[in-house]
Image 1 (cartoon, rainbow, N blue to C red):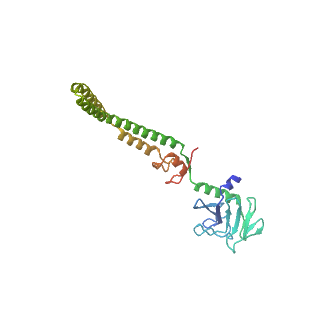
Image 2: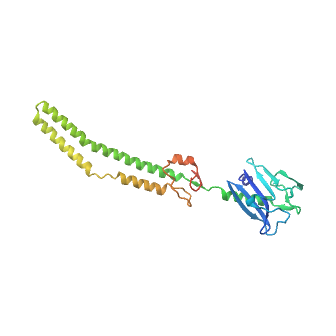
Length: 262
């Protein structure tokens, strides 16, 4: 077994004993907050001198703890059991992958490599799946651009709709000034074109259809469809969370898969 495989077992505990149903080797691994069970070896290969493995009760013949630093320690779990390392009976001892481990008075030869390989497989199956969310950056940026364009269009339309009111106010002021200066005829030549222009602008802005609400709904609907967890078994909407925040969360709140930007 390679060192990289053993590294994946750091921080785990492995219970080892006899599986009762077919007298195989029972292996229980606790990792990532989960307890996983497997059997190994041929049926009938484990003698009765090896204590039974009972996952629900955390009972077994012995236990191997692998520290965060990668150190392996084997512990004999019952005084009635017998655990041997390189021919010497031990209660607790630091071991290496090359050490010879035997269990019970029959000195059942434990295949440590098989135990570790099985544990690696169990840990790998329990680890959260990892998916790339790089494509979600483009989805979010596209949504922001669309909503920003809608806002700018609304602002322009609001300015145009304010223009007739401003022109009307200018017309009133002009009429008042011309009246005060006894320029009534001139007032008509000025105020009437202004009023016509104001009406034309109002009419144009009135008949122009404002699609902002529909466009915003469509942009949001597209976001709901595309801005989802990349795990095909999940596909939950990530929420109105900017991509920069999403990448900091590093995992899906629904399925627990982890995110990568590769």
